[in-house]
Amino acid sequence: MYVTYMTTLQALRDYGKLCKDDRVLVIGASGGCGTAGIHIAKSMGAKEIVGVCSGKNEDFVKSLGATDVIDYTKQTIKDYCLDKSGVIDPALQFDVIYDAATNSGAGEDYKDISMELLRPASPEKKHGQYVAINGSPSMWVRLFTIGFKPNQHLMHTNNSPEDLQYLAKLVDDGWTSPDGVQEFLKPVIAEELPFTAESVDKGFDLLKSRRAKGKIVFKMD
Image 1 (cartoon, helix red, strand yellow):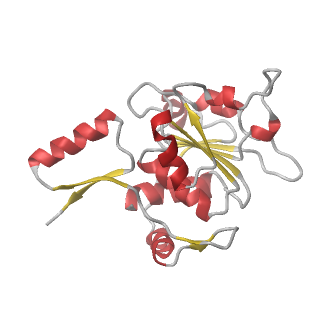
Image 2: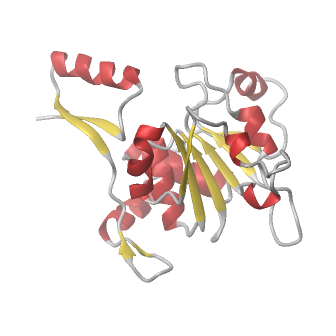
Image 3: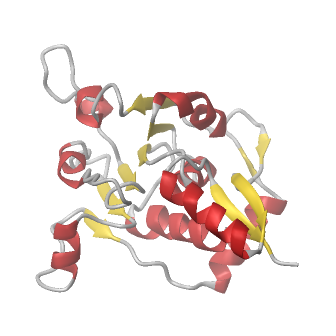
């Protein structure tokens, strides 16, 4: 929780400038930071949360609070946002795109297509923000050279006792949803394993398989 949820909180709040009633895209929605992204976006009052995952994880991602799911095995995130004439529908653009998948081990790179799907600035709304936690190779080059283009961010987590306390409060006290339901932050655990050499190997195999839903936890006795 310390890593995934603090990373996600800072990504959405500090880099994404997420506001109440925003429309959010979470790429890699069934993984550790992706599940955290759905939870934190809900707690911050996002109106729509679209998760990107494989179809087999659609029900799981919706159970976390996603209002819709893009099955990346069947359509691209750009295809999802096109109208009948093949043009990006402004109503389907996003205020925040939280990318927890790019450069995570299988050659994914969502940056360029994501930039097309950000909501442009208007008198009523800020410009949409793209926030990556791993980042494409080009973003790493920019980090150490000329800096980033507007509205795109490669985030770095800052250790913050205050943020950890804030997250603990969401676990203990929760928040009230727009329909008046009290909800609580409950991290998703893919598997809990004993801290042994064999289990560590098993845990890393599961992590590398890219099939873990949530986080892998080692129990320290």
